[in-house]
Length: 374
Ligand SMILES: [Zn+2]
Image (cartoon, rainbow, N blue to C red; front, side, top):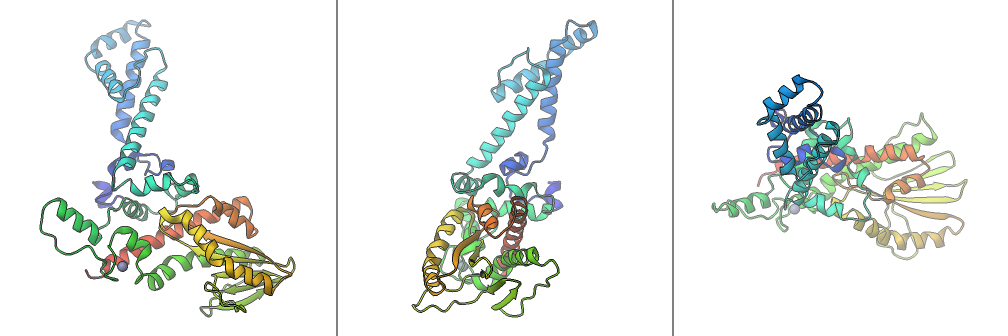
């Protein structure tokens, strides 16, 4: 409740998740209850093992027979852990702790609504799971953003669809339908709000999330070659040069035959090495991250083939840079960033920043959306 008041925990967010370790996608709060229970178990183990050492411990053991000793036995039984009096106090209490945390995690993940995204993403073979949860361990994410992002992931945001379904479940008259308040054609659930409303796309998704991630990478590339370079965006589309390189930002490529997708986010020509990187950014819904990589490759295949014919002496590399709206990182991302000339460590650090920017964008997008009248 206190967490709720200071904004570090969303009103309807998941309580089990609070105590799940951060690297597993939880919020890593230390539970006082669990700490107390593990201590009881460890004390019980201690006095039982040392009962013959001196008479004070023997006294204590007798005194606690119906208290600590009994409670500890019951706790271990409940958790389904072998009550082994011969292992060290530390071992047995650690076993208990791991078991309780695991149960919390399973409880969170199995929840129909709260665990939905978590389950879908966990099942995806193309996702880098540890990198995807990096933002939860990132000390630069404020607890307020983190709380809100978790609530979005758990689907606990007051969208029309959620209100509609809750009303129906509780048998109260429904106040309105579940169609989106902006486009009025699709169901207004959380996925629709954060990534698929056509009315939000160019006005909000692009400037608040996509462009921020894209500009971050572009600036990194420019500074890699010229630390002093002052990056400017004078127009929506432009061409600039720096050393042996030429950068095309948002430029439509003219090809002899018509190509449908001819305007990638960034094209980077390197005259010295005769190479050309075609870079596309996207922050899709987290459950579609691996599909999106494929989709981008399919979209830009024809353009790359056409450019191959137009500039036969160049080598073309397509670099899709995809980060989920709530931070899911596809396995290819690290390799793709490295293709742009960054080292392993730099690339990892960039992924952390991009992830954070994407999540902050999503939180802002959701808040903006909810401010529109129903
Ligand atoms: Zn809509």
